[in-house]
Image (cartoon, rainbow, N blue to C red):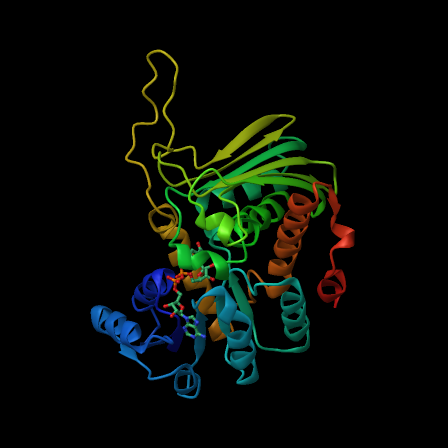
Length: 339
Ligand SMILES: NC(=O)c1ccc[n+]([C@@H]2O[C@H](COP(=O)([O-])OP(=O)(O)OC[C@H]3O[C@@H](n4cnc5c(N)ncnc54)[C@H](O)[C@@H]3O)[C@@H](O)[C@H]2O)c1
């Protein structure tokens, strides 16, 4: 299999390395608007680079992986689907709701599979909770707590093209809440704050946010996110049911210090980035994508799935701006999913 990858920044170089080690992958070819960067990454990994994205897409690919900045995703998905190339794209699908809806409609009309990179769906802990909830092992679920805490902010230039904290970061929590509970979000109330670098405010973003989600079976969900967690990269979830509680991320690496006398758990070492925290999940999702590209499996996370998470992010952004709760029924996109 010959796989092309567009965008050799932080996650692109990381995914290119993983792809080049997958069984059944014969060649990985990378490209970036910054051709010097693409050449450098290719040399470091012992793979090849293409001189442009067009040259890459026209070079006879069996599969295409999009790890460019979010603003480029929608055009690249359209270009790949037009060429009948099975495509993996990092989250989110687009910067805005309209474009995400248009891509969900394109997906519904097309036979070309598109897999969106919500890697938590491939994390062993989240999968175990999903299976336990589906089997009724913790009774009925009434409360969920989900948190994403980056150790340090991304570079300032990343923010204006990220879509903001809810669409860029909490969107992972919104997706995994759907995946774990099997329910849809019906209502949200969200707030945000900036207590760190002024470049967040200058980019119209916040560095810390909290949202309450009400699911369609009245499960109550608390989602928090911050770009400043000096304790380490901390992504976790607690699912509380009538018969028990399950936790994801509660292993020896949990980036927390107990204030209780004589308690020295967790012993560490801690994760400092999403790459360490989710390494096995990233390998599993790209392995799954190779199966999708071979025609051996359907997309495990479609554009329609990503649209649902994005609608929640959109609702939270609106709620934070207006100070009012937002019903998901008032956020466009349901028709695109129903197709
Ligand atoms: N799933 C995850 O855990 C995860 C983690 C990090 C980033 N991401 C997503 O991956 C994407 C990239 O993030 P990053 O942190 O690697 O950003 P980055 O800024 O480090 O790299 C982005 C790269 O894309 C290139 N680029 C921009 N437009 C392009 C185009 N039209 N064609 C080809 N290359 C183009 C840039 O030159 C840059 O090298 C974002 O959409 C982000 O949301 C996902």
